[in-house]
Image (tube, rainbow, N blue to C red; front, side):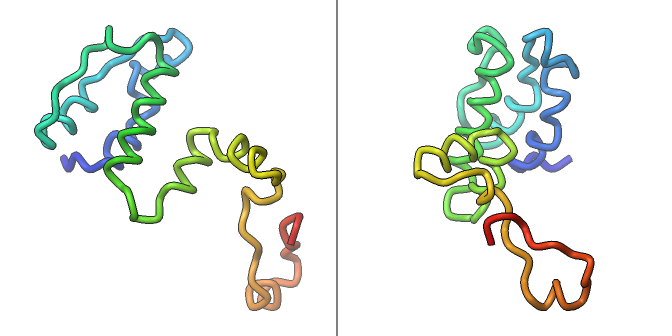
Length: 116
């Protein structure tokens, strides 16, 4: 198994035994990635709850993928895109990109996203 940043991102639904609601954290896959990067391992006790662990995952992806053009998708995935847009005076219509004219010509039933 490859332990790229996406490997632990794909397993995010399993990071706490499939029970984020229980606020328990299983750091096994995360530590596998950290060990491959020669970083110190973390204990489940290092995180107050599952939300704190998700925040750490977001920071880790930010460090690991800097400059690779994945930040916007991660912000949407982790729920930080809308607060970011709001802080810049934008609304939720900017969460989605516009459809190109070529796409709209190919599919006349396609409606343009709001705000474009």
